Image (cartoon, rainbow, N blue to C red):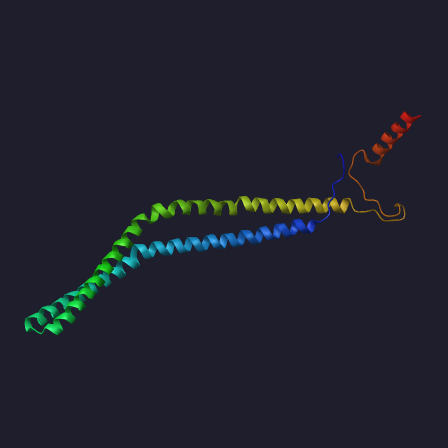
Length: 194
């Protein structure tokens, strides 16, 4: 090797790896929640909402028919003040039926468009889930191996302290030329000066 590596902080790599693991878990949880929400919405659009608004439309239709019958009865009795109130009740009931029919049409339209609008986004989320499961996992494992390798390197390169060590504890180097290579180059430069 041309020189020794300067490993100053394994903690930073370990913290990054830990943060990456937390990110992966949070992202998975968010994707799971989004999947569940899509599934719930699909169920509501396919079954619950159309059934609910169909029942509501029938109920409002019966109420409209009842109000129209009351208006017809009021007209026959020739009681004009009562007929005016009945006409307003019929108009309100008719608007309520129209509102229910409009909501029912909208829900059916959303149901028809659901797959074409949601499926492309769902495919992207699926690809992201695969990346989180495979790509990010490989990165986390690689960081683990890097930490192990650098830890082993740092232990090997630790300053030598002992009776034969120079004062100040010079770190060991993995440079194949080592100090001998530097001494040779210093010796050759001294020879050139002479």
